[in-house]
Length: 218
Image 1 (spheres, rainbow, N blue to C red):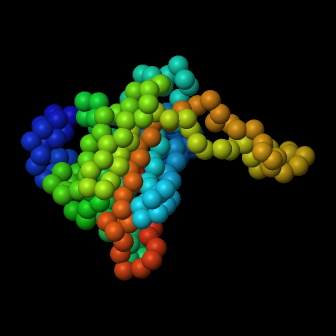
Image 2: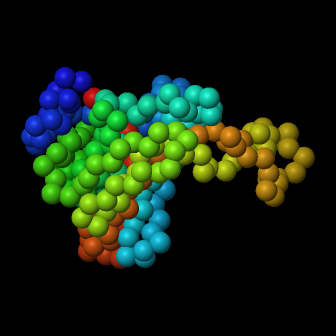
Image 3: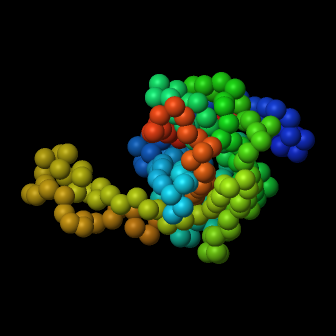
C-alpha cells in the first residue's frame, strides 16, 4: 500500500497494476466474503434520462451487525468497463478506489491497457471523490463535471429464492418458482459504489454500449 498512498497523494499518472478476482453471490470460494467479491452489477438510465447510472456491489451477505465495521479495501480497484464500439473490448473505464474514508473515481477515460490488468488513471480530466457514507446515516453524494458519486453500505437489492432454485435444479421441487417466493438475501447488506454519468461522456459510434465490472487487487 505504500505506492498507493504516495501516488494518490501526489497525483502522478499510474500507481500500480491490478489483476481480476471478481465473483458474484456465494459462487466463488476464492473470494467468498472477501473485500473483492462482486455480488451484482447494474447499469440503467438515470432519472435524468440524459444520464447512465452504474452500480457495483461488493461484499455480499453482510449482516446488520457486521455492516458497521465492513470496509472497502484500499488495495482493491473496482473498474467499470464500457465498450461503445461493439467489439467487446473496453473503450472507456471508470475506476473507483478508496483511501482514508473517501472513494476516488477516475474517468470515464481511455484505459492505458485492456484486459485483466489495469493501471489507475489518476491524470483523468474527469472523475471525482466522495466521503464513504457510514452505515445508518443519510447518503453522502459527491458531484463533479455533471457526474454524481456514492460509496457506502446499502440493503442488498438482489432478489432470489435460492432454496427453491436449488430444489428445481436437484429435481426435488414439487412446483416451479413461486410468486413472489422467499428472498434469500433479505436482511443482508452490501457495499455499493454508484456513479451517474452523462451519456455524452460514454457514447460511441452506435446507439448501445456493452458494460461489465471487475474487481482487481494490487
